[in-house]
Each structure stands twice: as C-alpha cells, then as structure tokens.
Image (cartoon, rainbow, N blue to C red; front, side):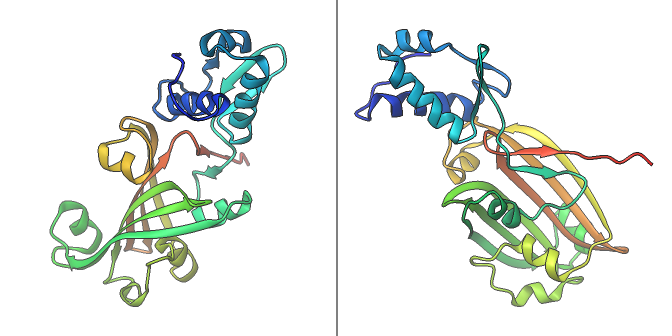
Length: 238
C-alpha cells in the first residue's frame, strides 16, 4: 500500500485507499489487511488514526477485525438465497437502508436478437429496461431486463421511472420456474460508471430467466458491486 495524497483528513484517506483496493479487486474477500503498526508506518500516522479508519471500514461492512489475528476483507451482510428470486428492494430495506430505483433507459421493440427471440419468439414484442438499484442513495446493482410483452402485456402501462420492474413482477406475475447463473466479473467502463466505481472493480453478475408454465416471462442481467453483496445457497435434505 502506498500513502495517499489528498486534502482529506488522514483517517479518511486511509479508509478510501483501502476501500478502493477492495472495490477494484486488488484485495479480495479473505485477504488480510496489514497490521495496525504496518499501516502506521506506511501512512506516517498514529495508532488512533489507523484505528479510526479501520473502524469505519468495519462499520461499512468491508472488513472484519479479529482479536489477535488482524483485519480481513469480507463480503458484507446483504445476502441473497440463490435458490429463489431475490427482491432487491426488500433486502435493502431489511438491512435498514433506504431503497431507490433509477431508470436509465426504456424501449419497446420487436424481438430480433437471439436472446430476445428465445424470450418472446421471432418478432414478438419485448420491453427493454436498464436501471440502477440504490442503497442509501448509492448504486448497488445495475440491471438490464427484457420483459415478454406477449406474456405480460400489463408491463407496457407501468411507469418504471422509480419502481423496480423486478419487485413489480414478483408481486403481479406468478412464476413457476427460474434458472440462474452467477459469475464473477470485472467492471467495464460503463458498469464502473453506473456503479460509481473503478474500471475492473470486482462484480457479481447474475443472469436469470423465469417462466410461467411454458411461457417465458423475463430475462434479466444484474451486476452487483462485489464488495457490498454476497449470495447464500441453502439446501434441505429430506
């Protein structure tokens, strides 16, 4: 780690420097943060200043401090069960944060790409939505969604300006089958800009398809800030 150059108070500089390394993937979950005395030497500061920076990182859920072992990078407590369709809005509210949705793009057109034709059939009408899920005003997830208007025509009349399409679909369209794929990716320029992070930052990408009987409902790609979100799978054995 190199000491930052900034006009901010030193504990904020240390906090931002470590957070940037976590968000960019330089530091991964489980990696050890240098000991306090090493940070004191790196940044030329007191133990109190280092402790203040580490306390802020702990409060924000980016690191875990263990007695006599040191500090380690962790994924915070906003978890999702991968065997179900998560309601991002409900999850954010459940952890005590304010939720917001910002629509970035909306269009209606006839299916012509392979993904669109698989969803709605060749020439079927689809609704494309791109938006941001916000936690306490900060982007957490960028989402691109296709809705099959042949199956869900009511979506055409819904104003998704500040309402999450996923939340709406879970409330009004019963699904019978879901298929999800989760990948670890690094943010492109566009993704980094939408999530207000750095190019190459660690992200989780979820690709999901849902059906109602034999009818396709929606296809969605959701890209999560990997430093602020984790998934949990639960299995029951009968």
